[in-house]
Amino acid sequence: MSTSRFTPELIARCWRDALALWDVQVRLSPPEPHVPFRPAEDHANEPLAYIDLVKRQVFVHFDMLESMGAADSLMAVLAHEIGHHARFPHTLGWDAELRVMEQRLLPGMKQSLTNLFYDLQVNEVVGRTHATDLCQVYQGFQRARGHGDVSSLFFFYLAIYEELWGREPGTLVPASAMAPMEERFPGLRVEARVFAQTFYALPHPRLQFVYFCATFIRYLPSADEVAGSMPLTGDVPLPDVDDWDSALQSGGRWEDALDEARERGWLSAEHSAKAPDALDHIDRVTRSLPGTSDGKLRRALVSRHYRREVDKYLLKLPSAPSKPEPYLRTTPEAWEYGDDPSSIDWTLTVLSQGHLAAVAPLRRELEADVPPASEPGVPELEIYLDTSGSMPNPEVKLNAMTLAAQVLSASALRKQAKVRGVIYSYDSPLVSPWMYDEERARDFFLHYIGGGTWLPVDVLRRSAREKPDVLRVIISDSDFLSNVTAGDNMDTLVEAVRGSRMLVALLSLADEFQARRTLAPVMRERGFRLVVVKSLSDFGPAAAALSQALLEK
Image 1 (cartoon, helix red, strand yellow):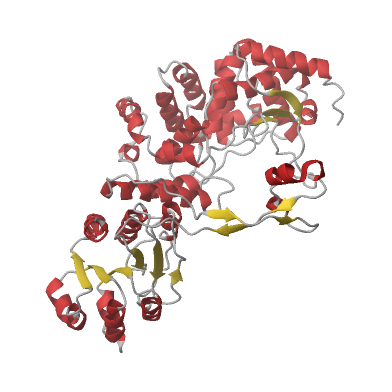
Image 2 (cartoon, rainbow, N blue to C red):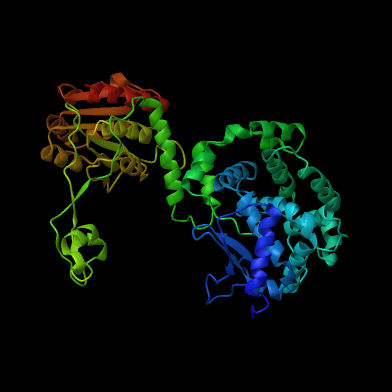
């Protein structure tokens, strides 16, 4: 399909008029033709228009717009896209906040409805002067699909615009589907009229969104149903991890809107429940997002949640900022073809080679620097964390033992000590290198194995022989007692105590007296300490008290 109809002069004029409609000056480049995301595949479902915020560039699928018979609607389409950038949602932080609340109101939604929410707001403004042009887009979209079969959600959405813009029923919705939809959803047309009259009159956007969710859920027969393909959707980029993290802490700002919605009868009994557990909420939100199957976003949000939990117990600020493993540059050498280009030190090359810099660059590799010494008297810390099936996966539910390990490691790292972690269950423990960075340690201690429990006595014995001046802490429960009384493991534990500055067993036990009898051979060692917690909720405070006793001067 040729785009010759869309001349540079026409595009420039439509762009100016679209900016004037919103009366804003935005830092966006004028529109360019859309390039298919996957040229070798059918791209009929690709967006009609969208903004690439990385390039700050507007793209329009000119061929699709012309094939829909809506070429005269270019200005309205551009105004729609500018409206997303200028006002609805304006910031990705607000978009994240709405998506988080959406998962609270509509748990399990596979496809977010937030883009439809913004479109209702944007199109109301654009439609004040260009409703006919927007109608041409929606009519042309259905005509290009060649059938009148639309989802119930899209049908209701179009019915709202018919009411908003004063169009006859059947102008936008397929006329053949009107009777079946009214039979399936009695009162649909009346509800669309009430929505158009109510939604735009509500005093603030949070109440608008709650009303939007409470109304639109009726037109999704199940939480797994998706809205299907629609024009002018999918044009709002996803928030980043900072936006998501801030949004997950925003629940308190919604309570007034939720209370008012309950008073108005918009929310049913299940919506009146309290907010979900923080980790459950993270799981709900990230599971509904496209392109997050690798779990990196969820892992980052979980890590930040544990950091806040750790900071509840460690009130003292770090004496120096946490830094990653430090590196130094080596002696410069001549760079040769085939070497890594990123190893070139261009600053040194220009200063030393002068006009020959481009043909004779110098390279310098990075090598690990010796980390700064810890505070006097603060030992290196080695933590053995039991992650058997008796405790939950820390990414799904708060794991008290994992929290204790993170409290201990953060306390040591904030004093510039080194930390090593050993995560174990029944077999194949995970052993980290010595870590200097709090974020890296926090991420390591989020690992989980599950299954049975077996203390890695071989790792413990070898470590005690190689590095005797290390503080070692074992975090477990009653399974620890079974492990150390099997075979000659008690002798190994005694050897590890003698090969450590101190060895502490931080255990969740119901009977401390019986535990001391079981551990009698090692209790006689001066370097062994038994710390018992009666409840899992005591692990965090116990770890904080333990770090205070062992690591403070």
